[in-house]
Figure (cartoon, rainbow, N blue to C red):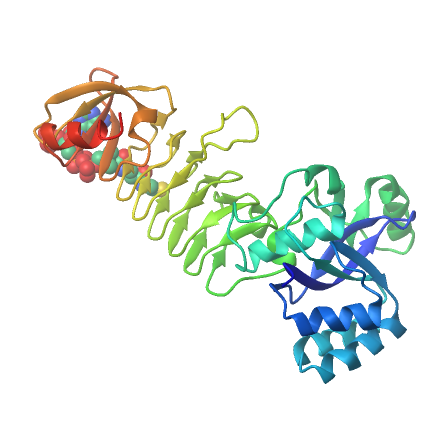
Length: 342
Ligand SMILES: CC(C)(COP(=O)(O)OP(=O)(O)OC[C@H]1O[C@@H](n2cnc3c(N)ncnc32)[C@H](O)[C@@H]1OP(=O)(O)O)[C@@H](O)C(=O)NCCC(=O)NCCS
């Protein structure tokens, strides 16, 4: 059983190097029949490969796919045969470290199509395979070719609009998963996992390999690697700490039915039903006064020791400035839970 498959329409620069690839119907664990057809009609030799295919090969591939009942992929292959852009058939036998730009794009599509979860795919080394590009109203352009393309557009009476200069494109130019609202589409990168029922407001942001499980109101930033549980909301301008730039190696996540207040932030994974007061940033080393349901001090504890604990309210005492954590449990219950794994 192979790992993934996709017929992609892409862009290349003047050197014939891949810039990006659009997979309309990526497939996770494709049937053996589909892969056998690729072996016979495209000379696929096994392993992880992105095969550059021409119109004639695509027509033959489409016929062979139809014969094994792969009607959707056959229809796509047939349409791709008339593409004015380069077409690739990408087959991943295993989820190994990617070795080409089309492979990385297939993996990012799998996540944004909700076929794979963040952290479910091997994504190491992808930055080196994603060229930094100008994303324009005329598609992706190699930065070395941008100036000439801008001039060409002007001479022809058009303006080339550069929407961003980045390694990742916005997700919605590739897929809009079912049941989402995204107020500002530039704020969600390809490779984001946007769960059904999620609204991303203008201040919200979702990086690649990160996202929401289901219903959520996202008005803050979901950094790379962070997953937000069902029913949890991120208040305006709040931050979830990523692991990419000095955020440490704890993978941050948010449990179900949590609220991270406006301008607050978390550097620890939150359990279910937790709240963080607006404006309070909890880093892993923040010393926290843990209070029980009677507001009695249980102990002073580092926030990292409260990682994944459920039913907590974090706030900064407005009179003393101390960070406090209130629980709805008694001191005895809390102590037992916290020290269960010591
Ligand atoms: C932390 C938070 C959840 C507390 O809300 P709450 O549980 O409803 O608590 P209340 O405001 O009713 O306060 C309960 C008591 O705690 C006190 N209190 C609240 N915050 C306090 C603080 N930081 N320091 C000291 N006392 C505080 C209140 O004065 C009140 O005291 P009382 O019992 O004497 O009347 C809330 O302040 C908050 O920050 N919510 C986030 C909202 C948000 O940002 N949403 C996203 C919008 S985009």
